[in-house]
Amino acid sequence: MTDSDMEILLSSEDNQEDAQKSIVVPIDDDLDTVKSDAPNTVDELAMELATIKQSAKKIAIIGSRNLPITHQQMIETLATALVMQDNTIITSGGSSGTNAAAIRGAMKANSDKLCVILPQTISQQPSDVQNQLIGVPNIVEHLDRAMMTLADASRVCNREIIDECNQLICFLSHTSKTLHSAVEYAEERHKVITVFYLD
Image (cartoon, rainbow, N blue to C red; front, side):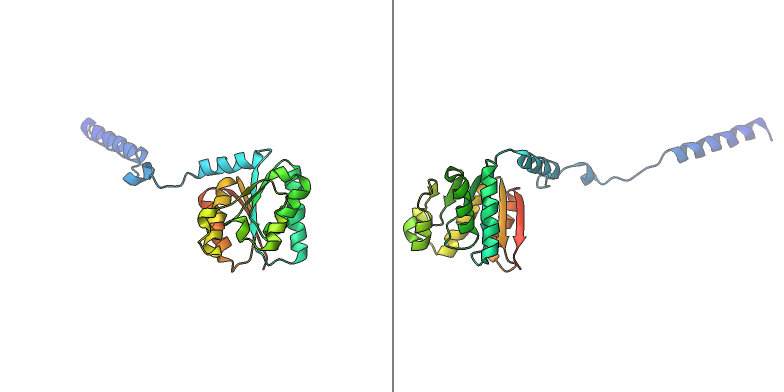
């Protein structure tokens, strides 16, 4: 083998080594850019953790009217305990069920830590609801919704309650469309959510 043959062989081996060291990976141009509508899950998680760590929170309790007495007693106890931990309870009016139990529980602990947001006005509530609201210092009425149906006013009211809270606790059945809609709205607003299904 001549010297020139040896040089060609060594040069060829060097080229093969370089080729083995260099690996080309095709990258799609879109991979290194962040779309404006992409969710920022790190920020959302940080917000949720900060909310959980807060010593005093605004906690919304909403849910079904059709609850057995044992469930109502549990919600009442929960609301009392949450207020005793210096949280504020936000709910709506209701003669029975979740909202009524939340009102009773919060009133036992500290009425100043209860905010009741009505879908319409006090005068449009049934008499038993009006009686339950006696002594509640923080009631929000909506005269502007007086001409709406109760169902439509309730949907708007649930959204207002969620906007005001840091955390949502909801008691519902799988067929509760209005409450499912409220939970979805809370998810969109990145609230901390606890859902209890009753069926």
